[in-house]
Length: 102
Image 1 (cartoon, rainbow, N blue to C red):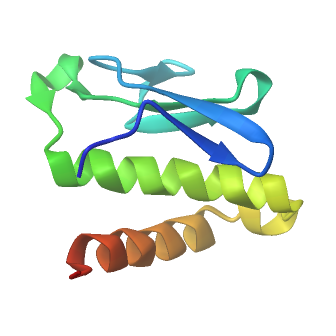
Image 2: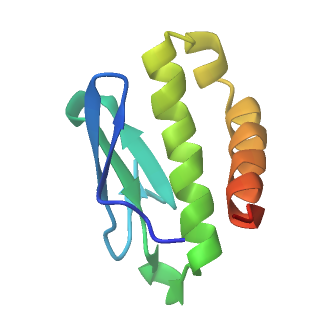
C-alpha cells in the first residue's frame, strides 16, 4: 500500500510524514499522531537496530495512527485512549483494505 502524504478527517487536513526513524520520549516507535500540528508519523525503520519496516508494517502503522485521528475527530476519548481497541480495530481495517478486490 502506498502511504498518502495527507488525508482529510472531518474538516481537518492531516499531514503524513515518513522519517527514516522515529523516537518518542527516548523510545523507538513505528509511528505517532500529533494532534497539536495535525501530523501522523510513520517511521521507515528502526535505525538503532539497522532495520527497515516492510510495506505491510508501515501500512499497519498508518492505519493505527489514522484510527486515533478518526476517534479524536469523533470525540471518542475513551476509545482513543484504549490502545488495545485501536490496535484491534486498525488491524482489521488494514486486513480489509489489503484484501479488498475490485
